[in-house]
Image: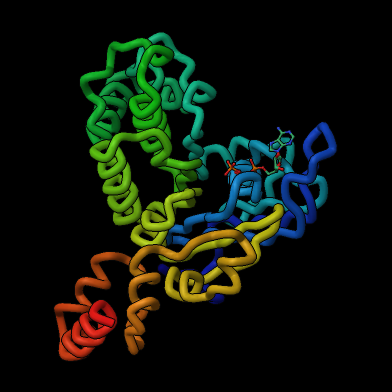
Length: 292
Ligand SMILES: Nc1ncnc2c1ncn2[C@@H]1O[C@H](COP(=O)(O)OP(=O)(O)OP(=O)(O)O)[C@@H](O)[C@H]1O
């Protein structure tokens, strides 16, 4: 992660407010940056403003008053295409994204728009489908795919355009465990390839595992922003947003583990309990707790 103050953000959003046509304020007083090489998880209850914020990152929505800067370029009505190219958006409802007669055509669509030669476009589209384990869907009609399949194809359609940032709205919603693992693994490889990721999720365990940085939203506002450790070991912040900490945090706290390590994932908890001298101390503390 490189979200230090000295690195220029890839995306810099300042939004005084966003008001929907019916007068609902979707978010207000939000300053949000995406830095190179980071995975940011947005968490918060229903209606907290996560989708509203994410849809501002590629200028799908624009602030009533504020500014979006992408890769140093202020985005205006005339250059939204720059935001769309640099920031790829995978919608939760993939039907809004899939428009072509077949899956392969859909993934090709963006490349053709950017004038990529046909042969190269075919190769890149097939490669993108393969990376999300969706090659077998290439001649299917997008509309008739299952929800999870649509999500994977939507992800391929964004990946193929090689954006600097990928935004995923609830990437695991509706996926079976195997597909969830596939998407989670793909998010990790996207990150390893140097693309930053912003995702929203109600799955706190997933946020703890995947994110370098967690932003907590409540009532249209970002009320907390830090490493998973900083956020998930802040009970007041979580209570304010009606969120529960990951199970590793609950176990560590309930077991009274006297540790600086502060595990946030199951793997970290297991490592703490089994892997080191302090882990062995912690294990005996946990055993003591269990027999109490
Ligand atoms: N198109 C719209 N028109 C009017 N109000 C909207 C619209 N979209 C969202 N809102 C409102 O804006 C607020 C923020 O909604 P948003 O969808 O951003 O929340 P969210 O955190 O993504 O929620 P969820 O977790 O339920 O998907 C809510 O009060 C919601 O009702």
